[in-house]
Length: 273
Image (cartoon, rainbow, N blue to C red; front, side):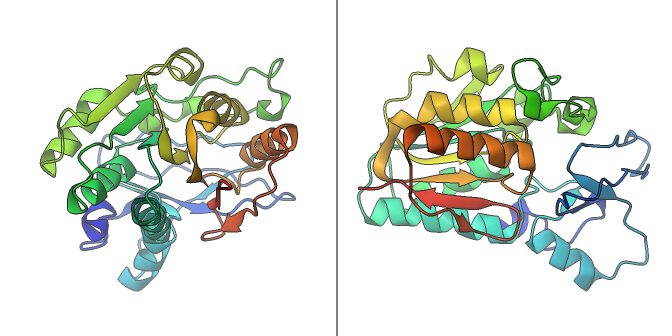
């Protein structure tokens, strides 16, 4: 599943290579053509995107794919195999320790991480656990710098390749034979969908909203539904606005559970029992 979801079997050419954030450096995202449909990537504040030359070897592309350091052309996830390994660990640990609740990802792109969670539940015959797929399915919101100053100048909303429709994500689930009534879609901006979402309990909460606004809105709406012993995974912890949202929330709630690095980009922690 992981090799298929990341397209590590074939290692397709990436849309772009994603370098870890360096606070003293802002890199430009230069045009890279991938067929006739790829639009130009704009600069993202705090996220360096650089062109990958055609002289990259398969081994170099495979290493980048393993750590989620590129944007795949056709793969169903961009989080890489190390973050998928982490997701597997969190899901299996929750199951083995009988931590009650569902899985949710807030910000799903093509749905790969949610598809993987649904597959894990299938393998372990977790018939009572649901997978919640939360996204606007139209890209990220323009920054609201007045309400969320940390997002000032953010350009994620200009990246049209991040806007994957709910219909396409459903088709991706169908390709793996994993679309059924236990897959629940929450379509819209997080501020509108998450506070009233009919979720009772969560075992694993995976945040992938990139921005301060998307991160803080998701964790504020969902953390109290996370069972003791459940996991919070922060895909974009390497981005300063996202990390700031996490620390603001943890400080306000007095959360002291250690944050554990996954691959230099994502991080996670476990809620105290």
